[in-house]
Image 1 (cartoon, one colour):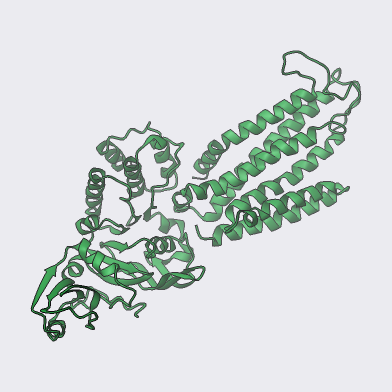
Image 2 (cartoon, each protein chain N blue to C red; image 1 turned 180 degrees about the vertical axis):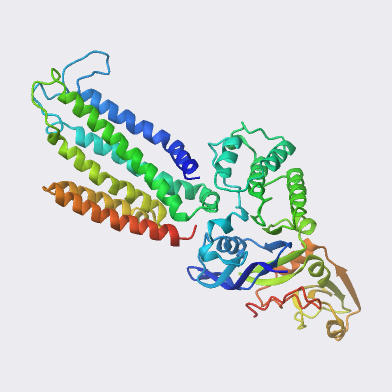
Length: 220
Length: 316
């Protein structure tokens, strides 16, 4: 039954995933110098000596496309089900409610992190390939992208919580999402990776606890 | 017989509005219970509380002997629920919906599903979003009964269906009822449906269960009296069991519950020229009983038989 539930979530997320994948493919294609007009036109505005991940817009674009995916997935998995009343169908199945929530979260996280990992590895692998770039590449240069990956689940959990938490007014309903985005931004601004990780994990614990609480206690 | 559904002083507020008020409901094994009430009477909220979708503010409820606060998946497997509007995943085909639902159950009667689909001429390849309301109801019914549940809870299952589809749906339901003595609780606005199917009814009025008795007993107990006076009819009458009254010139119309000798004497003491006692069908009885003026309703269900419980909650 978990498999059936996971497949259902995957199929419902396919559209959003495709949009985010297109966005990331476009981002990387431009960074590696591919022109959508059909010819190779050199590197994307940075010349031959730009350093991958360090002085390009990979992280910015990734935060837009993958962040959009995180928000879209989080809301679709919760508010969309509420809106269509399918929670009544789903939550009455003989399965613990936390298992339904955990499966949704697992699928959402896998998709969101999966697309980010693929994008980072693809772009990093290209930058590391001899002959592609006149500047050296070290995987440590991708630390900003990995940091983004560490904090992006906060945005997803925030969106999920916004959809799960009951609220009278749209603004207060979106408060968890707004808070999660601010916390994720703050985590990314911290100069030490270990502090970023610690703050992100603290955020995970808080938001996941709230998700679990509301999923069990709210009125559907 | 054991109580399949049992609630004790179940109460729910939305804001300051008390939607369900100290509900004591008992549904016995094998009963088909029609749960009636006007819009906003608290039927759907009660059903959602029974299924753990809405948390009560106070009181308790148990299904198949297990508290609804902690229904185990094994118990949930024995309970079917069709929510209002037949919510299904529209992107699925009928076949996909069956496979998806089937994956959650240890017991699944695939033959019965095929029979129901065949009966309603539904193809597993049809997309749910292309189905009419009636066809969605039929798919919901097939999915609900396939795990061979002991208890079916249906929230207004015939809402939005045309007469023919409704009749088909109900006939299928009746066939299912006859299998293995299942218990069914269903809410409805269509009294004809209830009359055909339910052997007992409960009527919610303003969150209070005012009626809890056999269907026939309710229908037979609510009477309408038309009193004709030589002059202007009296404006206000006080009488035991009085639900409603209207004055129309020289005529006074009264709706009474449990019309008996005492009430007859009270009515005759008004010295009308004539008294006409009119029997009501279930729909008329329901309408007269629930649309009353802003006054407390008399409690109903003072039955002589033991199998009828008096709705003693929320007495005004």
